[in-house]
Length: 319
Image (cartoon, rainbow, N blue to C red; front, side, top):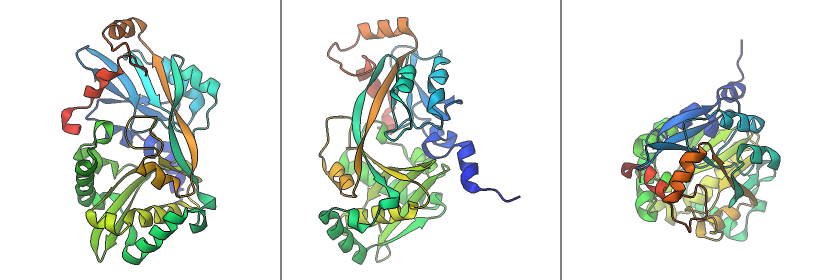
């Protein structure tokens, strides 16, 4: 019997919703399945506390059935809190989110989203059209199949990005995680070359009708040749007819007030519209939470109130 590969992917979860993706965060902690909602969390040790928290797999919580999330989270009993950055294109109501995250729910970061069925060169900014034309003269782009065949080049490019931009925190993924993410169902890796020499690569994750820009890396040659413009254009065209929306992500770093850095301007130039990702928080163990808050910075504005402690929850080898 013929099998629909797209249906098979969705039954076992793909992209940000898959068990394989959650497993790539083993350096942070253990994966926790949210069986009803079709997603995963990472259970992480709270430093010097002998306790655990849970948070979404980086960068977003993406669920198959948001109506089941509150029930899934109500069954957790071995963490102090749950914190999640919520998919900005999630089909979920405020009431459903407040039921899942009764203790904290606020706007967090603005993300840029492209509607794929309307995408063409005419939707781009003048700046992007100029750079795309220049990049096309220099760059050749193709999809790496399987994505894992590009693992060595991918890790090398990301190491260069790490040095160039001083990546820290959860985005500073260790090499084995970078490699493993290429084998996640729904992962798509595109590669740009100039005269046969590697210039850049971008990695996307598809979950359902949405595709998410995950990570990218470029060499000095890639920056000079405008490889990013060709890679994004080819990516968006590749996913037309496959997905409805392309989520390009937000500004770099953890500061939600950053709205006009170079990365945001680059993403906005693709004819993207803004959607807001929200930050949700749930207290599971109220007594333990109170004890942890007693030692927290009283000026901390975000959830959980002891979140400054969590900067050290990512092992130094991954930072």
